[in-house]
Length: 521
Image 1: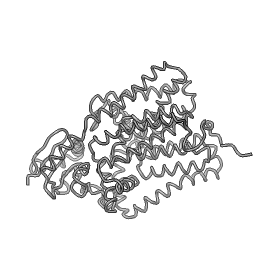
Image 2 (image 1 turned 90 degrees about the vertical axis):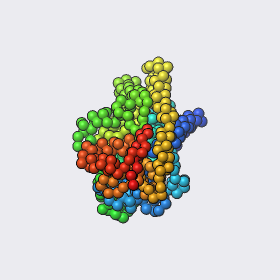
Image 3 (image 1 turned 135 degrees about the vertical axis):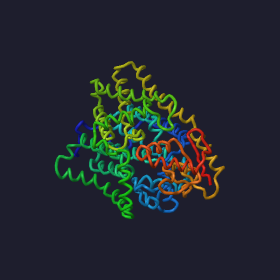
Image 4 (image 1 turned 60 degrees about the vertical axis):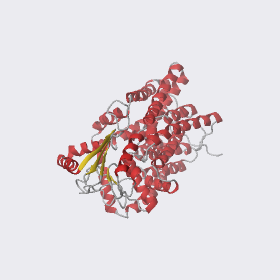
């Protein structure tokens, strides 16, 4: 007599195990429609959003690796910083995103949109992984499809998917790791552990925020498969299977580190202490407060506007309200709480929230790691309310439609603003004045317009420490924020920078967010 698949602590999943679920043609059509909507929202934003500094910082080493075989960052001024030999080896960030982007640039001609396109594609992977995750946890297609549809129009999701940073790749790899584990665990527990952690190990060498997804995966293993770990042989087998992918990934990273260990130590330490990345571990209660004041309030339109976000952004607070209401409904209504997967979804959301509260900076772009879980709980609540007829179905449809309209409307509104137009006007002005050999102090984002071979040097101190003088200084809103930040730390340095501007440069252009100073000589 063959052994039946093992049961989890919360009962075996209600769907046939396997990575690809068995769906009907209309169900697959629904998945395809959600992806089409996602791409339709991403493409205009990816084409119209102006570049920003981080994209230039990440594009530089990737492009150098693709074209010269050296993963150095050549857009940063390192004088007065611990970014030791960054022009030769980029160590301040994890390497996998840079390597995959370099491979991409080997195939696709380099441009700003080409730099963003992999993130858009990774976003599609994240959507499918989230569909699988909700499907496996609840055992139903309807909440999974609803979560997919809501996430496909999510403003935070679209915003992160349309920029050349590793966030979306990390989200996709982390969610994919969880989805693969959930899909395979009843067929072969050890294989599920290995396959899931292969993807998680890739996330590990992509961005430190992989830790949020890793904590969620650990929770699922303990929640669903604790009986598989009760004996020492089983426990050590599981640990060995889980550890192997990280050892391989870590070994690959170590080989690169050994090219210049001193530079790695200098760069990674500098990045690790920036912006209070470990403040949450030192002051947990303060970290919880800052989650609201520094992250959620800004992201959902109740605080200061982030760069590039204008208009009636307070409407985004309605989305946050929907998340909060859905959590309270699932917690407070026994009919919802007793639905399969309800408590587990809340536990996963709590794990992400706690991890994000205690680790890393309080910046809005990192919300993309937890937004899929908020969306999953919202979708689950909407589906369960419909199924149990707790509220009028028309009211449920109206509420979910409102969330979709606010999210998609915000994206469409931003695409109509066409941020690239004032940026293009600034670039045209510089090109009209610029002579061969002239270089520019300004955001690394300018590399997409003027090149990454020394034409642009990102130096917010505008040569006050290095002694270098550029023919042009391009100041945007981000540079103004840098100036204010430097002023809080070192008033004498800012005074020296002001003297440089007044004595050696003249203001030649001031329009929209840009001010351009030209050297008097």
